[in-house]
Image 1 (tube, rainbow, N blue to C red):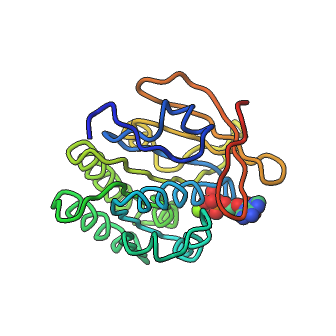
Image 2 (image 1 turned 180 degrees about the horizontal axis):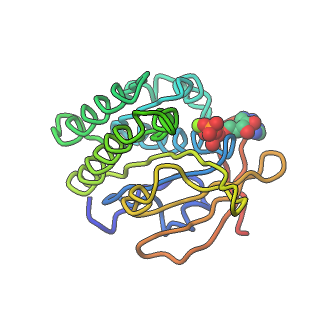
Image 3 (image 1 turned 120 degrees about the vertical axis):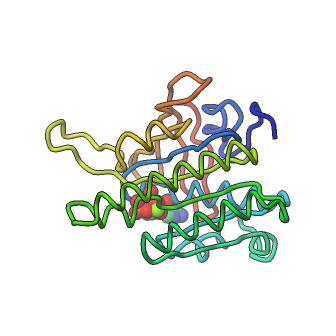
Length: 230
Ligand code: ATP
Ligand code: MG
């Protein structure tokens, strides 16, 4: 895919915000509090990519995605699951191996890979914070991200990473985990926010070629739908 190619998320308001969809030559970071819709958005894009005939490499540290995937878009599982390569690491070491395997598969080219997802990139890293292994975990994570950036650019596929948040007690605001290296490495950054009920807001915080802005979407039992412009 060329540098200007986009992979639609399928959620019209988000695609408008992104100028058509996810970029194919860089990492997109989704961050936001629990329940803000990070996993649902990953699954929505993944189901769409698989339905269009490309493979999805999906690294799931939460252990829930496969079950929820089958309810997205009202699709029968057999139309989506055969093109899913799912990995469910149970530690940061396993996650590092899963990322290396996914990058090798994407580079290998034996399957037409259309998307690589790591949800959540920072789950195990978060567990290491304030522990003796924190520095090692940060280094491992930064090497993973560097490899993911490189594979996105060389193969030309979107890489979607989710990130958890922590509350900065000084400012009172929610901030992305993972330190500045992740924010520098991600070419696009979307912050998801909870609104009342099923409504969610997505804020474009960083993008190479789009202005900052926001949009809304809604969560339904069969996936995410356009919530119209803000
Ligand atoms: P975490 O950080 O905990 O992984 P997340 O950002 O990945 O959270 P999701 O798991 O994508 O969040 O979103 C789950 C949210 O979607 C929950 O708030 C849940 O209540 C909501 N939800 C799930 N199904 C529906 C539905 N049919 N209608 C409305 N809301 C729903
Ligand atoms: Mg999640």
